[in-house]
Amino acid sequence: TALACMFQCFFCQRAQQSCSSSRASPELSQECPAEMVKMTRSKTFQAYLPNCHRTYSCVHCRAHLANHDELISKSFQGSQGRAYLFNSVVNVGCGPAEERVLLTGLHAVADIYCENCKTTLGWKYEHAFESSQKYKEGKFIIELAHMIKDNGWE
View 1: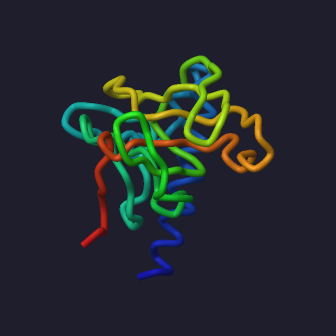
View 2: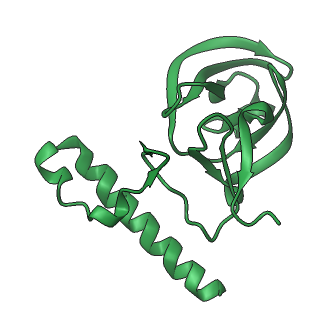
């Protein structure tokens, strides 16, 4: 039910926050409950999105990448075709920022990659030089070629 989903999401997010904050100290990392570390095909991912939401995953290793609720736009162009703009992502690493001239002008962007399989997925907008593009700052582009839909899309 929707109410059960809301409670599940609240507790999942809370548990993930407490586990991720304890990673800085090895002696605290053992305080995370064992049920919060889930295994899939012998791989442990950093974050799992709740099963009650539609999610996007890495096409190469199935690590969760984003919740559908974080999708801002489907009308972006990546270097390898269509791409989606997300407000936030998980299980993603970020490279160094560099200035690139994209279709919408000059931006400072950093390539993002899957933390599990290290595949480059897209980029993060660090800075937009044109005022009309400022809404992209801090947002993430993931190319459709590198993600699949998971959980509840039927």
